[in-house]
Amino acid sequence: MSDAQTIDDHFFRQYRELLDAEDAAFDELEHAYEEGDREHWQGDLDSWHAAVARRVTFLKGHGFLAG
Image 1 (cartoon, rainbow, N blue to C red):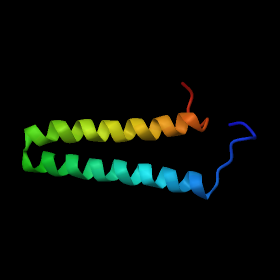
Image 2 (cartoon, rainbow, N blue to C red; image 1 turned 180 degrees about the vertical axis):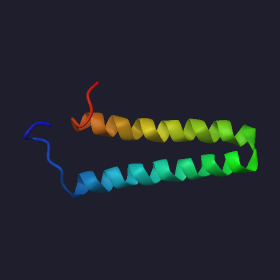
Image 3 (cartoon, rainbow, N blue to C red; image 1 turned 90 degrees about the horizontal axis):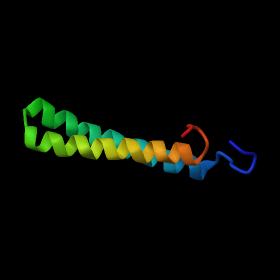
């Protein structure tokens, strides 16, 4: 992470929003699994993967992950 990049309240607020979205997507995935709802499970899995990808992109953009 460069000196120009800082971790501030805005960073933490954005990161918390990404974590909350990921958590909500996982909850939906978990419910579909528990109910044996394969049709919704696949869509929920895709939503969860997208939420994880947004979080990873955010971290890469701030220099916390390589790639």
